[in-house]
Image 1 (cartoon, rainbow, N blue to C red):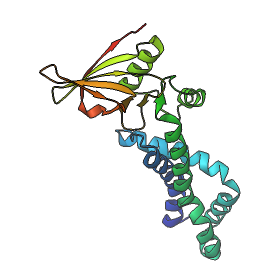
Image 2 (image 1 turned 180 degrees about the horizontal axis):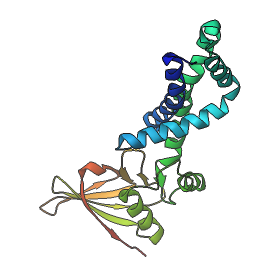
Image 3 (image 1 turned 30 degrees about the horizontal axis):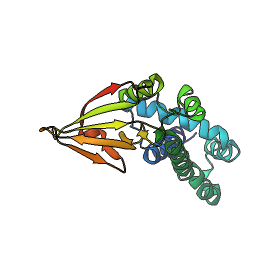
Length: 212
């Protein structure tokens, strides 16, 4: 009959690997964690089941020893298998998160790549925030000039051309115009010859214009 320690191990196998995998992915990619504990638990369980399936040859022995109440007879093997269950998922999640972050941002004038669209379709990458959708729609529609009103009362007018980009989720939202000028409250203009990078946190409103 399995004791409480064995039962705790089985429970841990259903939670810990998946939590580590999801946590590693979230930290590396910058993705937001679910806002409800139940969702976090559900993610951990699903990810754990996937991880356990991939590492079944090793985990199978643990379950057999739990069923036979024989963990104490195989401590060395348990210590060798433990990092596979606890540590490696976080590393794999971190690598995956870093790769997704690299694919996801920045998005250039042509919008997201085919790889990113596939990742969004299967749910690995979120379908995007309002910021993402607004910019993608503007780019597709050919609205290449935007007036960006800032919290300091100034405005920046920028051209979104081939060397411009939008940093979209999961990265912190921002936009770079390769050609831009600033207009202050008095109407005075300042040209930015090397372009302008704007953090979305400094933006009050964006107005798009079509050129051509």
